[in-house]
Amino acid sequence: MEVFPSPLESAKFIAEHSKDVSVDEEGARRVAESLFDKASAAEFGLAGWKSLHELNPRTADKEAVDWVFLVDTLNFSFWSEQEERKYLVKYKNKTYSGYWSLCAAVNRALDEGIPITSASYFATMTLDQVRHVFRSDTEVPLPLIEERHRVLNESGIILLEKFGGSFLTCVKMCEKSAQKLLHLILENFPSYRDEAVFEKKKVSFYKRAQILVADTWSVLEGKGDGSFDDISSLTIFADYRIPQVLVHLKAMKYSEELMKKLREGKLFQSGDKEEVEIRGCSIWCCALICKHLQELYQKKGQDMHEKINAVLLDYYLWDYARDHREDMKDIPFHRVRCIYY
Ligand SMILES: Nc1nc2c(c(CN[C@H]3C=C[C@H](O)[C@@H]3O)cn2[C@@H]2O[C@H](COP(=O)(O)O)[C@@H](O)[C@H]2O)c(=O)[nH]1
Image (cartoon, rainbow, N blue to C red; front, top):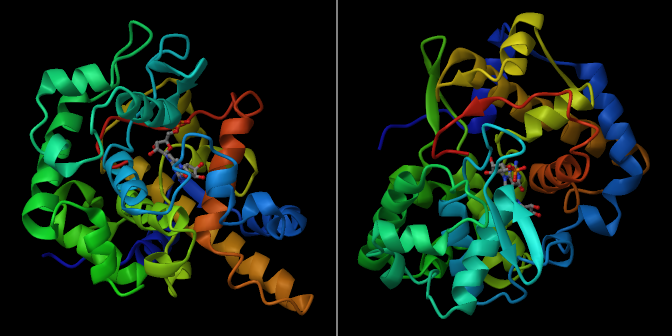
C-alpha cells in the first residue's frame, strides 16, 4: 500500500504553506486556558462517550465493537443543502439530525430485528434494504445512499473474508496499539483511505480511520483489548464541524476570499486546496491546543497525559459545536460531498 505522511506531519506541512487558512497561536493558547478548568471534569473524560450520549452502546462487548465499526463506516456527509430541509430520524419519541440520525436509524433497525451490525448482513444488503434501514422521517433522504450501500457491502465482505466477520478480531490482532489498528484499517478497508495531494506532496487526514480507533477505545472504556497505550498519538478528526468551532473560538482564521466562498455555500471537491487547508490547519490548531493544555497542567505539577489527548479534545469540541449551533450560525462550514467525513 502507498505510504503517506501521518495526519500530524501532513497538518504541520499544510499549516506552514496554507494561504487562505491560518492557525492563530495566541488564539489556540486562549482556548487551552479556557478549557483548563474543564479538562479535569467528567464531560472531558472517556466516560462521557457513554454517559453523555444515549444512542451509543452501553456495553463493552463484541456487539458494541461491531456497532462502532458499522457506524464509523457510514460516518460521513450528513449536512443538508438547506438548513430547514434535512434528513431526520425519529427514535423513541426523539428526533435526531446529522450524525445522531445515523445512530438513531441503526438502533431503530436493531429494535426491528434487522441485524444491521452483523457483517454477514451488511455484506450482502441490497440498495433497497439500505434505503429502508436509513429511511428518513422527512422528505429528505440520507445523502450519498448509493455510496453508503457500496462501502457497506465492501467492508462487510472484507470483515467476513479476512477477520471472521467481526471488527473485534482486528482489535485483538493489534495488541493494544492504536497505531497498529489504524494501519490495519487503512491496509484492509479502502473506503477509509482519506488522502490528498497539497503543493505536490501527499498528505493524509484519516478522519474515519482515526475516529474508528477512538470510538473503539471509548466503547471498550479504555480497558482490556481497548487499553491502547498510544491513544495520544491520534490527531483530532478533520470533519466539517471542528473547523467551524475553531474559527468561532478564534483559534483559526479564514481569508476574506475564502469566507466569501463559504458564505455563498460553494460546493468544494474532495482534495480542493481550500478544503485541504481547512482540514490540515484544524488538525494542527488542535495539536497546539493540546500542547498548551499539557504545559498548563505541568506548571501546576499535574501530569494529565492520560486525561488530555486529541481524542478527548476533539469529542469535547465536537459536542460543544453541537450544543452551540445557534452561537455559531455566522461561521459557515465547508461543503464537500464525500465518503471521508
Ligand atoms: N471531529 C469529529 N467529527 C465527528 C464526530 C462525530 C460523532 N462522534 C460522537 C460520538 C461519540 C463522541 O462522544 C461524539 O459525540 C461525528 N463527526 C463528524 O461530524 C459531522 C457531522 O456533524 P453534524 O452534521 O453536526 O451531525 C460529520 O463529518 C461526521 O463524520 C466526532 O466526535 N468528532
